[in-house]
Image (cartoon, rainbow, N blue to C red; front, top):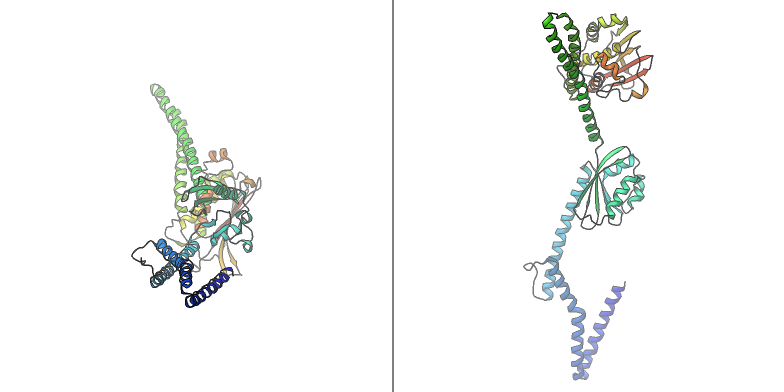
Amino acid sequence: MLNKQMRNLNIFIFFGFFLIVVLTLILKPALGLILSFIFALWCFKNLFEPLLQLNKQIKNFYNEKDAINEEISLPNLITNLRYLHKRFVEFEIKFKDYEEKFKTLNKIVSDAVLIIDKNGRIKQFNENFKTTFSKSGVIIEESLLGEGKLYWEVIRDFDLNEFIKSLMMDENLKPGQEISKEIEVKEKIYLINAVKTLNGDIILSLSDVSFQIELARIKRELVENISHELKTPLSNIKGYVETLEEELEKLAKRGKVRELLNYIDPIKRNTDRLVKIIKDLLILSEVEAAVKFEEEIIDFKSVVGGILKIYEREIKKKNLFCDVQISENLPRFKADPFRIEQMLSNLIDNAIRYTDKGGIKIKVEPLEETANKIKKIKITVEDTGIGIPKEHHQRIFERFYVVDKSRSRQSGGTGLGLSIVKHIVLMYNGSINLESKVGVGTKFEIILPVKDSDS
């Protein structure tokens, strides 16, 4: 409004001054010449000088001598303005192109991205940031999340807010310098990469690395457990071999060899345990990689019967009953028979191993959900053994995890059996459930879906 008034005033002064100069030249030529000179200075100051400054600014802005006309004239100024408009249109097209690419990148990038200005206000965020942290309760409701909000008004996590605050208060943080930190946010670990831009904005990229950290922990524990489990039988074998060597030297002189047999049995037992650990590790490695051999229709009667034949002596030795119920109406289930045998063998082995009285029940039956007409097979292995305390239920399927380490070592257990079972079940998109009570027994229930092509 003020600019418009000033422009109207200048126009009024120009025409008023011009009229006075013309009249003065007619009536009093000498005075008219003086006024004409003053009028020319005023025109130069208020009309031509701004045009010259504009022309100079155009040159300085582009600093392109070839493209900008050096000669000062109104037609050249118009040419320069046309050039300026042309370049502006080019920049506008490029800007829209970069903006579109940035939006596309924000959509496809898996990390959560947040941009905060130097005043702590949210400048921009991608869809992953909104969906990831709104579900977990880290940020306020989606309807209240918007650009221009202060970050601490939106983010509810203390550690994340403190990290952002430290970035904004760090005067030594230079533009382009990257800072990385792992922060726990709502029971998940995020790797946060932060970069400061030239205008003082902070760009944060938050990547969920919980799985990688858990995987590293599992690998570390696996190495520690393998080292421990292999060290014990190897130390025993070494000890007995050294004792056997000493006794051989003594008995060789007296001609007695029979007593040496007492040292051979522990060597065989520890060797068998060592071989079983390595064998189970190889099996676990295969099932984790979902390695399947040739699949065929599973005959559960034959598979269960073959497994029980292996443990027949142990069942009779403990005087256990064995109740087997295999339904005649099972749907055709196609799978790798070796994997199914491994799965059942580990469950039956555990049931016999940890049951001293009573017995075991094995049941295989069809299970059809009428709502979605999905055919399934339900496998139940139940025992009347020592049971598993409730606090161990969540970790019982982990590698090398055993409830009673002393008993497991004595009975030859490796702590890998149930982990193998779980991975085989998952290989066939199934589920496994555990019910157990100390002193009463344990029941494992497996549900395996039947593919339409199988039935």
